[in-house]
Amino acid sequence: MKIFANRKIKSLFAGMFLCIFVFIFISLFFVIFEVRNGAFCIMICFLCMSALILTLCYRYFMEQHRIMQNAISQITEYISGNKDVSIECNDEGELYRLFHEVNSLVTILNAHAENEKKAKKFLRNTISDISHQLKTPIAALNIYNGIIQDEAKEIPTIQEFSLLSEQELDRIEALVQNLLKITKLDSGTIVLEKSMENVSEIVESVNKHFLFRAQQEEKEICLSGNKEITFLCDRNWIVEAIDNLVKNALDHTQKGDIIHIEWRAFASVVQIIVKDNGSGIHSEDLYHIFKRFYRSRFSKDIQGIGLGLPLTKAIVEAHNGTIEVDSTLGIGTSFIMNFLIPTKL
Image (cartoon, rainbow, N blue to C red):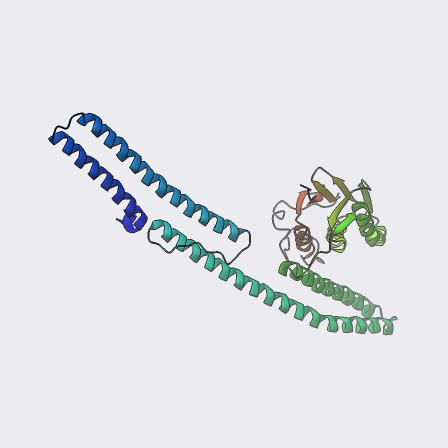
């Protein structure tokens, strides 16, 4: 039987059988030789045998408990980040077979993690190299485009197409920049420089960034929140996240629409909300809007490149926060960012 492959189990059963055999032998001796007070002596022997068997079982299960606790502590340490742990499995039996399989699983997971790390590094370096290589021709094209515009001021057709060319170059540049940012966040190469920042000041800087565009498109950006609220963050990255949400709101609203930026603090969370009364998001798209390069078949936005919302999500999660979306077609959309307030214990 497989159960007896473990020497400790064999020793336990051998000890129990020995105790029972000795008890039977002594009992037969008392019965055969009709020893005076034999029944009493047999009872004493039975109690001694029971105590001995219980002692053997107790010692065995205490040893098993120690082994299991050690295994649990090793697994907990692995989950905590120590990739070099392993469970001792230098004995035979089903339990040690289980430990051996757990060690094999740890080895496989470590190999997968290492391969993923190398793949991410390769992807980061590749995208970074391509992006940097693209910067020079994009800058040159912008210069050439400017020269064409200056030289063709009296030719409307060339002016029109040079302006369209400039818009496309701006899109390419935005795509390159966002790709670089997302890749850096994914790879963990960016160290967030966190400090206590005033939410009102952050939101005000975002508002100034889009104020001219909002006026040109005859839209309104409204701010509301307690000016004393602060939270721990990297200011530049949080501004980037809110920027993307406001830009997204401006892209999907019409003349006369309003974009609200609200912020509030709860017991353990600082919440920043960007909402609009624009076209809304189709229910089919709600589960996909944070995917990179996702393009909705319902969207009328032909300028978007599908990286703004994924970048925002990556920034929020890098701050150990969460982002949610609530939208109704024809009524509007709300993006809610939640940032935990560190507690002092």
